[in-house]
Length: 215
Image (cartoon, rainbow, N blue to C red; front, side, top):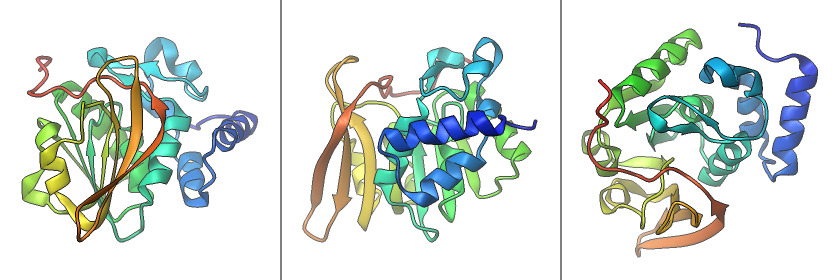
């Protein structure tokens, strides 16, 4: 696949910057990763619009500006080991793979994990490990993590994920009591505990326990 034409890409990057995505490394990663590879069927021609789009299993691929803002808030360095809870289309993990040393991404839907793995292979992203698991428990075997990103909304930051964050680490996730009102927060782990920052209002699918029943 050749990706978008230069004008489409320019408009895409302009839209990201206008929404507050200013980190040069994040913009470069988002310029490099073709979002069109992660959007199937009817919606593929809308891959470079700044909007969320439906994918399989009743999930969505987040709008690019939200992906950019979450990635920027994570402050990923080239040495970091990152956990992503909620693989979805795989787009967010592909962006992270351009910025971090290693990315572990988990999703409760095996079908989504398989589809994402195929795109990662196509893009030769060898530093991503994908697995089907209940992400609300994190990945204790691989903990601790320098960075954790959650792409589904919980009522509060899940305890198991907080426990798997390194001292000095950062977690970015949406929290909220309902499907309509959620807040993107950043959690920093310090020697003394956890510092919380509210970043912006967002809308995400809920973080559910257990595995999806989609095979």
